[in-house]
Image 1 (tube, rainbow, N blue to C red):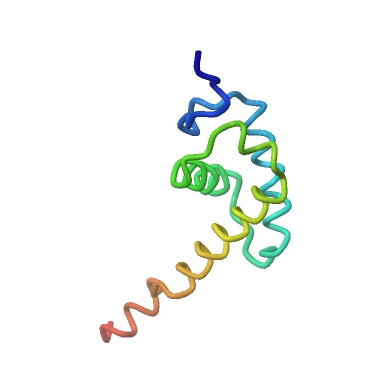
Image 2 (image 1 turned 180 degrees about the vertical axis):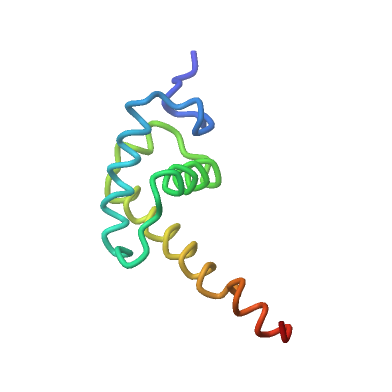
Length: 97
């Protein structure tokens, strides 16, 4: 019989306890990026993306250091991508509008 904690479940199918623990790890990871913290809705979307992109399972939550590091890397990449993406006003200036 397969252990349900050792196989990937999509984020939306995770038990609330697992989501809460993942959120706690995200809080620790976000401490490094306090200048532009995501909104609660944005954080939920980021956590879902990180969970599903990495194919995590509930057993992964038993390693707080690994989860915090994974989330720091995820948030750093997201922050970096947003910083290099032209903003609407910058695009208008580049296009001469």
